[in-house]
Amino acid sequence: MSFKVWIKSKAADRVLSPLRKELIELVEENATLLEVGCGTGDLLFKSAHKISSGYGVDVDQEMIGFAELKRKATNLNHLSFECNDALKMAPRQFDIATSTLCLHELPKQKACDLLKMMIDSSNMVLVADYTEAKSTLGKISIEFDELISGHYRNYKNYRRFGEIPSYAEEVGAIVKQEIKSAIDGISIWRIGSKVMP
Image (cartoon, rainbow, N blue to C red; front, top):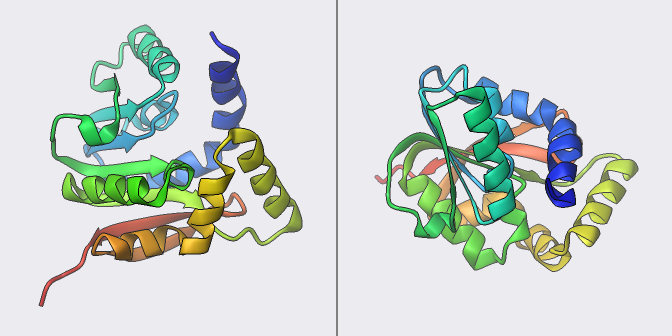
């Protein structure tokens, strides 16, 4: 296991555990679930008892390799993982499409294209991503994480452009609900298509 995968599976996934629980509460029983930027597949593994199928896609081969080994070891055959750009995967329909702390890492156009794809391929979109932290520690932690992660410029642009609500507006969608996570500086946005008159 590479150091990057070890850090993700042993540290980041544990820190994000409260957020995963909040997302799973929003997932309907027996739903089909797409996770864009699934990383180690942690959300899909934690929701496996509740969903009828889960499909994780990520561009990082090491993360997908880890997820696939864990899937085989746990015999969760209703989950599947693909190393691919989500915009290049074969079109499919899901009940729910989700991403966690993924869209802020990308240039705005790519993030908007992914959000549009998620909206078009599902009945409900749940995006968990950064927003304004209330505490000084939360603000410093997010800034530091983004500095060492290598996508600080995209993160700063994400904040400047208005975060997920502005991305939703950009692709002709609407934020139906914002839920503040127990983790300071993260929100979950429930997004859908605008109802045409």
